[in-house]
Image 1 (cartoon, rainbow, N blue to C red):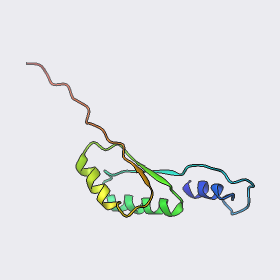
Image 2 (cartoon, rainbow, N blue to C red; image 1 turned 45 degrees about the horizontal axis):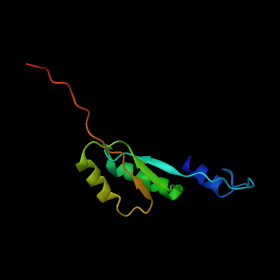
Image 3 (spheres, helix red, strand yellow; image 1 turned 90 degrees about the vertical axis):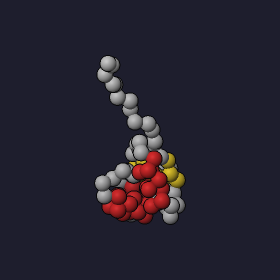
Image 4 (cartoon, rainbow, N blue to C red; image 1 turned 60 degrees about the vertical axis):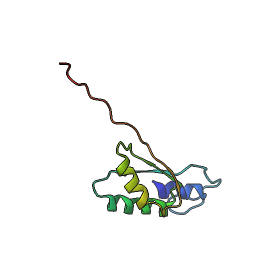
Length: 96
């Protein structure tokens, strides 16, 4: 999908044929800082960036340690970044 949008933004279809006026889509991708296999997730992110991604948005992160580890691993990345962070939902405790 990123490849297709990038081509359209350059005035080409998927086969490389001119489409006339280029589109003006923003190209954003998702990334999961808490992925079980972070190395694979980062390989996928690199591929998305090479394909034309302009920014990334994380899946929700509830553990600051997970986010910090991820940020250290992507500090070389030169695209915009937005982290979806939050607090863990409260659980009800039985009253005594």
